[in-house]
Image (cartoon, rainbow, N blue to C red; front, side, top):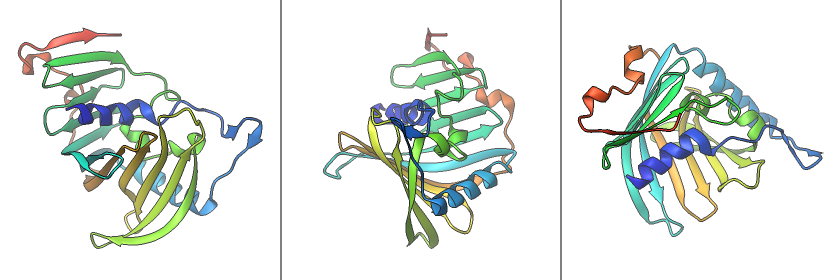
Length: 224
């Protein structure tokens, strides 16, 4: 459960918070070839009306020992999203509020959805979160699971971040993100691989709000 909630924290808050594409007074730039690939991924995602993706999450220590493996789904519609992980960790967002549910503690924490400059949502992971917060370069192509994948190495501009590298693998033909690997400064590696993605998922608005009646005895911690 700890790694699942850590993943959720990274997903929602760990990758942004820096708004100027410069280090000190020196302007910085990224690889134009990498930007072209990322722009194509962003453009493709924006054509989807509602998205549901299945993924596998892996957490490794500095020596490469696997600490946790989990599967999950992420659903997105407009500014709404829902992340569900095997074991019971869930995040709901109705576009205004966020509910983070811990099944082990049977507790849900409620917060407000912050401004776009200070929080990364699942939608941003598939679109243009990279523009102002990272330097990125193209590392070449590789074959995996029968797909041609393009690897992009991303370095946060803000050196105070808890992580120092993010590696994206982009499906060259589908123009979608296949996997993301985050390298923490402590040596921990968190990665998730998308196993399926449906851009026409039949999602209702109700599924993005936490329904207390479906979680008997749940304790609410309202931080709004």
